[in-house]
Amino acid sequence: MRPDVEHRMDRDVLRSLRATSGATRENLAWLHASMAPIFFHTMREEPEAVASLCLHLRDLSRNRHLVLADREKEMMLARLSVPGSLYETLRVLDPREISYAEIAHSYSNVPGTDKELEFQRYEFDRKSESEISVQGDPGIEGRIRRGIFAALRNFSPPLPSSAREDLLRLLWRNNPGYVRLSPPERVARILWLLHQAKSRMGIHIDVQEADTVGGEETRESRVLFAVGNPPQKDHLLQVMEVFNRLNLGVRRAYTLTISTGSFPFFLGTFYVIRREGGLLAKDSPLFRRLCRELYNTQILGTGSEVYREFVLTRLMTGDEASLVNAFIGFCHTSLAHNQPHRFTLEDVSRAFRSHPDIALQLARLFELRFDPEVADRGPAYEAALAAATKEIDQYNTGHRQLDGFRRTIFRTTLSFIRRTLKTNFFVPEKHALAFRLDPLFLDDLGPEFTSDLPAGRPFRVTYFFGRNGLGYHIGFSDIARGGWRTLFTRTRDDYVTVANTLFRENYVLAHTQHLKNKDIYEGGSKMVVVINAPDLQTKDRMTKRLHKVQYAFINAFLDIFVTENGKAKDPRVVDYYGEDEPIELGPDENMHDEMIETIAELSLRRGYLLGIGIMSSKRV
Image 1 (tube, rainbow, N blue to C red):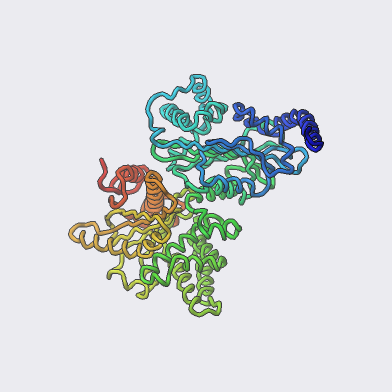
Image 2 (image 1 turned 60 degrees about the vertical axis):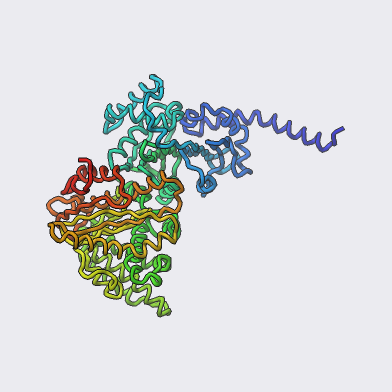
């Protein structure tokens, strides 16, 4: 005979099940009333998961989360919406590559709680580029195709008919379930977004007022964000952090990462509300700031100490943090080639991170010098420069040796700001940062830091900084030509060692090329870039990182060197140099044929004065 305690437990279980059956119907009704209709569209092949949610919805008041599905290539869970809940989940999923993410919040609190429902769905089914490159008809039903193409007619600018079939096949091969289960307009929107990004240098942002099915409480703005070859790690988390930092609540988010046969694209649709009320308007300062921050996710790495210490704590904006990281990279590479044991990357970085007030003062000084919207920037800049110079000259913590070390770093940054002649910092849709420098910064440094360089000074120095690398182009005459060399580093020590001598190596190579070119009208130049790639395990990933950095740097190059009547053509580039600059590049280490063609095509498309002549060794 079974003990009485087991009988009592059985009675309690049966009583709980009887009570649950009624509550389950109520919970299903609550879901229909409180979730956006698209939830039931995308979940119509997951009745067991929805049933589990209905069965255990009220248990969320005492359980951290409810797992609705945990499969090899998919996970679904529900939890109460609390600060950090999404961050916590994404951290757990960190090693897995997300091909599709769906995050949705209810419009009302879960019964019996004071929190909204947060539903998270992730798929882990990234296709390889070779899988996507397969030719032939993938077998999309005519009914689905016709519905999507009809919905595409409502989008502007229109999607060319020649492109829509190829894009639909591409999306189907990546995620047939998404195409099959989504309303036609939803698929059409993603195809349109992908086409816009491919047509606009691999990145695009837009905002629209979303259709509403309820009252005022369901009004939302739809933000569309697409980027080619996105950061592989923490990208979704970083994007969500941007929305949160700008006080934009993300009610729903749907993201796809698809392969295209050459490199992946991130395609995100975010339904947001302003927490202080109202919609996000396209012509508003808030939307312009959102664009700058989202574009900047391509430059600012989440592994950066500056990101963690200054951005997450809201001491700086994302683009100011990218600028500070660029300062750090410039100071390190400009000082360490002569004194590598003194000016280590860690110590240079620590100088800025120990003094966020000075770091921010220097960033604001740079912004004042180059902000195109400041009409009378000269006097204001000079006053700010004098104040920053005084602050640095008087820098004194009582530690004589350390103070001298850090004053050198901050003075180097001041020289960088004073000697920069043009930059793409205020071009929002940039892929990397570019700074065209007057070589007089070398005289500012003095022989203490330049004695190891060849005699003679270059005509121009251009510094590039990106999320996964940095580099220089150094030319010894106005019209100059020379190769573009890219160096891969696989460990932190390797990166620091190469970066220590990067500027000197670049300088010597450019100077040597100049001597070789003494009998022709073109002087010598060289571009050398170092890529930090400690997290890449496969050749395919390394190639994607290589092409990402090269694509970013050539676009940054064109941002500042495409001119009209001598001045930078883009009005957002304040140009203190004011002349055309004919620079010819050539293939060198790690410059693949496809990038040679891409660079030439970009130069022609963007209107650089040399056209396809920017790059030698092309097919045409």
